[in-house]
Length: 223
Image (cartoon, rainbow, N blue to C red; front, top):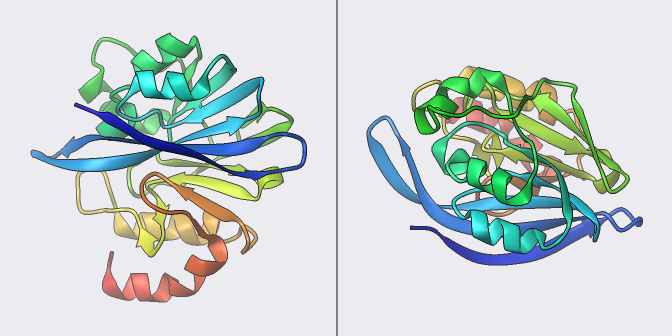
């Protein structure tokens, strides 16, 4: 059972493009365990068109948040079941193509064995919406195909479960690796301007500048 828990808006570039957050609730299951989780669903665009990032748990709530706007694409930051279980239903409701990095296809297939994403994501791919661009950056570690999306005009990056307020995403489960996620954060995310707002897969936003000084501490603690 899932439930939508609220929506808010943040940040614009002066042309009408903005970032909206919907929080949905459900479960995450992997390696024999199941946990209750709240997920951030990000909607980027304007009053006419949007891109949806990680439509978790509740397809109807995501469709309601989108309203009558055209959805140019649905982007998945990675293939864990809390992020993808409602993705196919959401894509059908919204009539939009679903994109996933193929390195996470085994995670997708565990949830959706009879269907496939509509398109693959590769590092460097650019997605356009409402006059702004989102560039895919491959940031493995939390999962092999984990991908972040950088929106320079909005001063934002959408990191999925790669980078959170206070540290990297979890790496203690199948298909994850701590040195890899640290390298992704160090070489792909911490090169962004320090004022860049980090929109995460769960929890509160942060900034690159707030997290960057903590890198050595994370390495020392090992998670």
